[in-house]
Image (cartoon, rainbow, N blue to C red; front, side, top):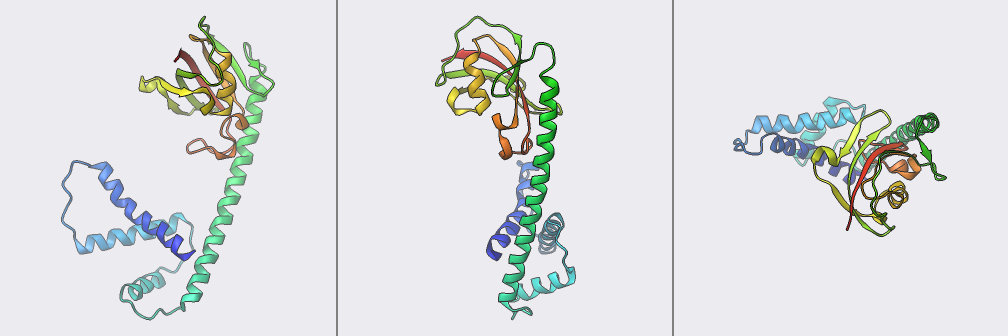
Length: 232
């Protein structure tokens, strides 16, 4: 467990280099400066501990760094250090789980409330699965099958209005198989005709459920504007 935590810490340290490269990919790298490098490493470690919410004694951390770097006999027995790191991991895991569960419950309540209000709006069609949609533009083309390869334009947003993805903005339609997308999309797409544009409201369980990636998060109802362009 201590090895995993230290690996994560080291990854955090190296992230400062990655960020610098992203910020100025064409700039020539500076000559290494011992003092500045030492400060950068220490600053990143300190930032990591703060972001993790760790209650530590900085003077002791500095002393431990000095002893570890000098390959000295540790002041605290190794088995006790391993135990402390394991306890820290357990604490951080439980805190993260509690935070996640709270967020998931809050998002589910907001999603349920939004969908309950939205279903009463003019033009909204509600499917037995709980998926809702409204027709924005009607096409007259063919309907895809559950295994068709389709080309679509889409815009995805949260119920807050935050847009997390858009092929419209990229001006580049997406191409994929119907049976390889979100559960809600797999139900909606075979109902659409080429040329249709629908606004679709997916309950959390028809979207990402509790496994919503950032910036979506757990138990979020999602809104998609979908325009079916082509069946390949």
